[in-house]
Length: 253
Length: 248
Image (cartoon, rainbow over all chains, first blue to last red; front, side, top):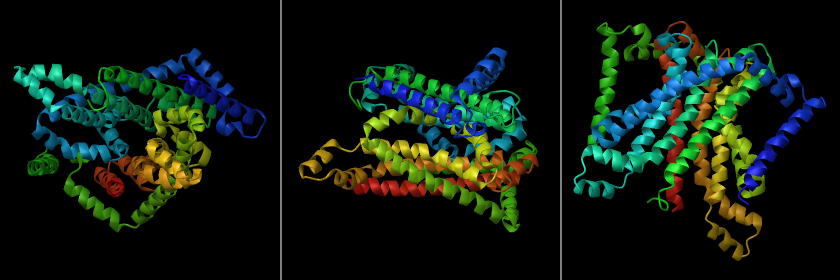
C-alpha cells in the first residue's frame, strides 16, 4: 500500500495535464493565456535542441551554486560560532532577527547600486536570502545537543575539537540539513527574482523576457523547468535528511 | 537574560553608530550606504509630500484583499483535504510542487493574465499566502489526537459534530501558524509585484528611488515595509501563544 500515494500523485499530474490539454483543444480557454502542455513540451524540446535552455540553465545554476555555496559556508560558520559562544549568539541576534523577518527582496535596488545590474547582484540576493535560514538552524541544532553527551565526552578528556567533530556536529547534523533544505528554496527564489528584475540570461530572465513578448508558451516552459528544479532540490535534501536522521532511536533522543 | 539584552543592544548601537560615522569619516560614500540620520530626514520628507498616503493605501489594500482571500481559501481547502485522505493524496503532489517552487517566478505570467494594475498584486499576495496556510491547516487536521475523535464518536457524536466540536478547535493553533507564515510571504509578494510592474504603491516607489540613486528614500520605504511585516507577524505570534496556552 506504500506506493498508493505515489500512484495517486502520478494520476493527479496526468489528470491535470489531460484537462489542461483538453480545455484548450476544445477552445474553452484561450491558449494565449494558459498555453497547452503539448505546445510547452514542443517549446522545451526546441530550446533544448538550440542550446538556449542549457545556456539559461547553466547561468542560473552557476549563480545559484555561488550564492548558495557562500551562504552554506558563512551560515554554518556563523551558526556554529554562535552555538558555541553565547556572546557571539547575543551579538548576532538582532541582525539575524531582522534578516529573518524583513522582506529582503525589497533591498534589490540597493544591491544594484552596489554591484551593478547582473550576475553579482543575483548572487548577492541568493546569498542573503538563504544565509539566515542556514545560520539559525545551525545555531538551534548545536544548542539542542544533549548537554549530558557533552559532559560525558568532556569527563573522558575530550578537547574542544573532539567535542565539535565527534559529538556536537553529528548530533546537530539533522537540524543543519533541515536548514540547508529550507535555504535551498529561498536561494532559488533569490536567483529567480534577481533574474526577473535585471539579467541577460538565466531561467528567471527567460520567464521575464518571454513575458515581455507575451509568448506564454515559452514563458510557462521556463517556469516548468524552475518547478522541476525546485522539487528535485527539495526532495534530494529531504532524502539526505532522512538518511542522516536514521541512526536516531525514537523521537527526541 | 540581562547579559543577552546588553550584548544585543550594544551590537545594535555599534552598528548604527558605524553606519552613521563611516560616511562622515569618508570611509564609504553615503550615496551607496546612506546614514541613519539621512533615512530619518528622508522619511519626514516622504510623509510630508502628498503621494505617500496614496502609495501606502494602495499597497495595503492589495495586501488585505489578497491575504483575506488566501485565508478563506487556504483554511477551508486545508481543512477539507485534511479530512478526506483520498482527496489529499490526489492533490498533495501538485500542492507540494507549488510549495517547492519559488512562487514569485509566477510574477510575469500573473501580469500577462491580469495586467499591471491592482488585480495582479492581489493575485500575487493570494498565491504567496495561500500555500503555507493550506499546508498547515491540513497538517493541523491530521495532527488531531485520534483518541479525542474516538471518544467523541463513542459518545454518539455525529460526523459534522466531530468536525465542528473536536477537529476544528484542535487544529486552530496550526491554522494560525500557517497564517503567520503566509503573512510575511504575502507582504513580500505585494511589494515585489509592485517592484516588478506597477504605477503606484510602495514597491513602485522603492524601485523608482533605486533607479534615481536616492538611497535614503529607498531605505525608509524598505524599513517601513519591514516594520509593517514585523508588527503584523508579532501580533499573530502573540495570538498563537495565547491559543497554545489556552489549549493546555
